[in-house]
Amino acid sequence: MEYGLIGSRLGHSYSKIIHQRLCGYDYQLLALPTEAEARRFLEERPFRAINVTIPYKRLAMDACDQVDPRAAAIGAVNTVVNRDGRLYGYNTDFMGFAHLCRSHGVDFRGRTVLILGTGGTHNTVAAVARDAGAARVLTVSRKPGPGQLSYREAAGAGGQILINTTPAGMYPDVGTCLLDTDALRGMEAVLDVVYNPVRTELLLRAGEAGVPVRACGLEMLVAQAVYAAEYFLDTAFADREETIRRGTADLRRDILNVSLVGMPSSGKTTLGRLLAEKLGRTFVDLDEEIVRAAGRSIPDLFAAEGEAGFRRREAEQAARFGKESGLLISCGGGIVKNAANIRALRQNGVVLFIDRPLEELTVGGGRPLSSSPEALRQMEKERRPFYLGAADAVIPNDGTVQQAVGRALDALEDLFAHE
Picture (tube, rainbow, N blue to C red):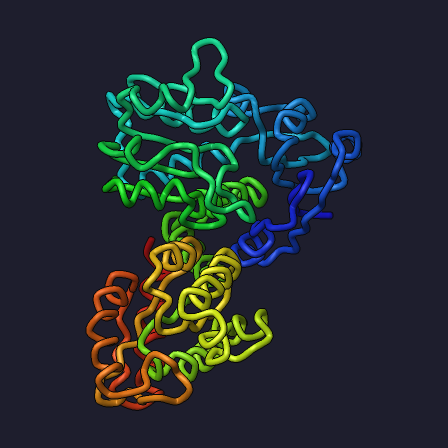
């Protein structure tokens, strides 16, 4: 192959999308399950340039004829260029993480930095922090060795910046985090190199703790790819910063879910299907999924299991689809009553509140909780604060369907462009 990525497992890699958008060349994903296969591939050198991911970054460094000093100091190579049969190794993860920190205004000078994890990425982010003037860089591990901290000790270590380099909370095992919210209070920044989902449990807890700067590894992923492409082609992008910004926005547009919340009959299903078509996404109606899983209609579910039973089933479907990527999800009107549902929908997506005037909402229509004008009015009064609290953007639906779709597309363009 000419260009590509090697690693032991590559099922959820975004590298092919990023590189082919950046440069238009053919970029292949080559899974090499064993070290013997990876070693043989590097010895045969059947490529112009490759990226390398877990667990072969050290192996790649050893296979190179010449290694960039920074990559050698870190002990890992993630970019290999074949020039006339000789392999040259670089570490663009360092550049990508440094870009992520710069773009979010993270100031390491004089700070105590806590790094979760002891793998290869630990060395990369530690090097960035030290180069940027960190006073102390402390390593946190579940099984701490000499000079390392346990997670319990980390909570009282006085750190200002915390960086996760472990796979904790990564798809499909979302929701995992070994630090509670209280341990994050007072932090200046929390960064997570995990990029799927874009809001790991760590970042969600950091938000609850009031940490002002929170960022996932998605922009780092794009930035390191841009730097790698420059090595691949031996030429620099005319505007590297803009290329990274645009590439990150494009990737967010591809992978983030869009969830619609709002009152019953506010237009979520109609708008959702139209938006899904325009955005090229799979449309998911959570109420339909509940009915499909239960094998009975919503009125029958309410009759048999009550509202509590229905809400339990609703939470199961929110958790199921919320961790996936690239979906357009239309939610039932009461999904906001459970904060865990919104957490599930926000972990890898954005939430739009479809705001239709009360007088235009439909009474009844097979909806057990909006059977009268009075019930509908009371419901809207109770739920509106929850809709507003859950929403990344409010979409007025007080005109034509086309107007509401246009407003939603404008709001999404802005949300995809900014973390």
